[in-house]
Length: 152
Image (tube, rainbow, N blue to C red):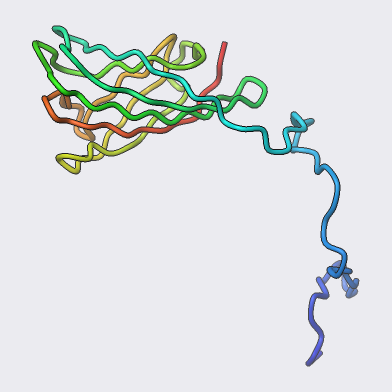
């Protein structure tokens, strides 16, 4: 079979595939899909708080995309003054999440210290901690996280 290319093996026979024209039109998404063919992400300003105390000042930015009940979210927070804030960082979600211990997991990086971050989406927010479940709140800390979760 030397020199034969682009011929998949199927039930004992080779069937040619025409790759010249490319794929055209709207391709359905598995399981019925949404037909989304490239709509833009939506920008939002996440709320920020702490599990203990009060963060005095911060900046935040986020964006998300919804496909059916699935939400893809990316968020960035910089704590400019931690104040009395401590423990986990609470970042507001753009769309409320189903409350479940197995719903969306978030992951990211604390860019000033270089630590891996992790969190769980539940209700209106995601609670973010360092990889070892210690709090990440400190003046100058910057968190960049993303995750996928089921909305209500």
